[in-house]
Image 1 (tube, rainbow, N blue to C red):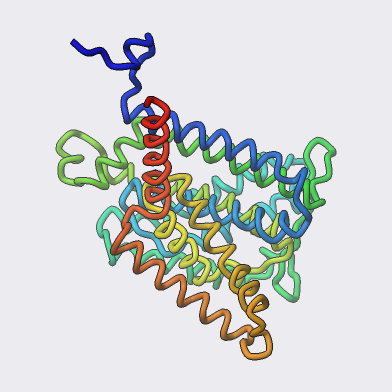
Image 2 (tube, helix red, strand yellow):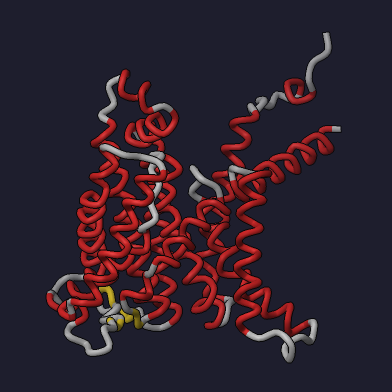
Length: 357
């Protein structure tokens, strides 16, 4: 009887699923370490214009993905909850200066979660397209609220909020490195929490509801309360992303900084990166952030700056987004993350086979 080389050598055979899990965890750790060390070797431009917006939008994508990819509820009002987070944090820091920044962020997230539950109540009765249409009410109402009531922006005539004190235990976070540190620590903490949620009983119940609502009801899952919880958690994540976007990236923002276009951008991030995927949101965010930069570089490299204006580049960017979304929906409905995962797994398997020969 022939003995497999791995068994003969006294090594354990790792099942394919375990290999994939080990590979994924190793990639997550490597990316976390690389992201943490990024400010040491990158310019302020990379930090301010690429990394901070990419991480903030990726975190907003995580919030929407928890609701859409895992709980099966569609929302078109994610940017509204980002606005709630930004304006709530601004007012808490302004009116309660004794509160430390992390506490303010958590309180702002909880306020947005309460608003999310309020606008998630229609999910108890409707779903699908009708639920998506109803969440537009949150988008339009929040924009109207922050535009027509100047108290939220401290009676600023331009209706703009400016990033207040960004410091923690006396450490000033206003520098690009300080703001990036705030973004990366917050993002890594919430991504870790997201993985814990989807592996918990709550996450399994969300997946059961998304797969088959009737079966979930039969086995005793309270579908209504779990959906409202999904709206609350999603709104919390979007609120924290809104704080990072408004304070660490824009630094000066208003209600129109979180308009309907921003909600659709977050939706595109989820579709491109992959639903029911945490890391996929950051791949989708990287695509959204880097595409305009690559287009500008391509136009400059080809010597077309005299013939192609900003409007043409913007329209081309939208065309690329549309083509990418259509391609993904047809060819790769699980998004770029699953595609990259298969490619890496295939290369890893080929490497193991070649090294075993």
